[in-house]
Each structure stands twice: as structure tokens, then as C-alpha cells.
Amino acid sequence: MSLAKIMVIWVKNYIDEFEEDHSQELTAKELMELRCVSQQEVVEESLLEVDEVTAKQQTSGVIRDMLKAWEIITSYIEKHHPDKPMAMRATI
Image (cartoon, rainbow, N blue to C red; front, side):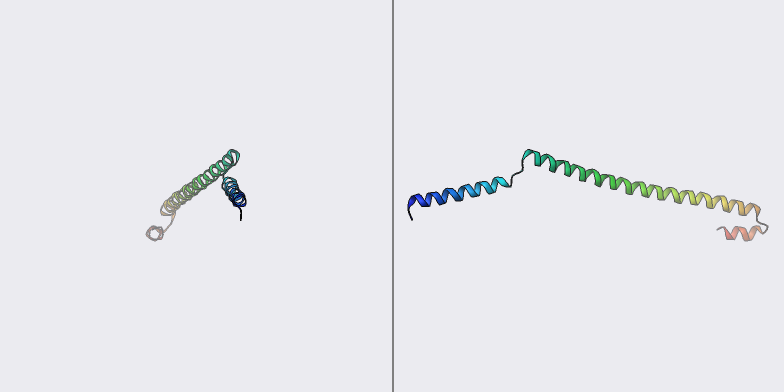
């Protein structure tokens, strides 16, 4: 094989490697799109966390409301039930 053919093959391989390396690099537009997608994912995750906290707070609020209602009911039963000792035991 002549030196010229070896040089042609070497240059061709070098160019192929160069193109392969640079084809994997992202353009500025692709980087911006990737950044936007990443930011959107972070925002979505953050919103999910906020929704979970809100759901827990709502659940706590519902429980508090139920306890208040129970207090009102027990107070009413204790005041108006004809058998006061039995009413006291039933509401404990």
C-alpha cells in the first residue's frame, strides 16, 4: 500500500471521527430546548409537592372539622339526653 493511500485512509478516518464527535454536540438551540424541558420538569415536580402538602392540609382540616362536630354532638347529647350518666358514657 502506498503512502498516499495510507494518508487518504488516515484522513478519512480522522474526518469520520471528527464528524462523529461533533455530531453528538448539541447546538445552542438544542441546549435551550433541553434547559426549558429540564426547568419544566422541575416546576412540575414542585407543583406535585405543593399539591401533596395541600392535600395533607385539607385532610387535617377535615379531621379538625369532624372533631368540632363531634364536640357539638356530644355536648348536645349530654345536655338533652334523659339518662345523663348513660349519655356521658356513650360520648366518651
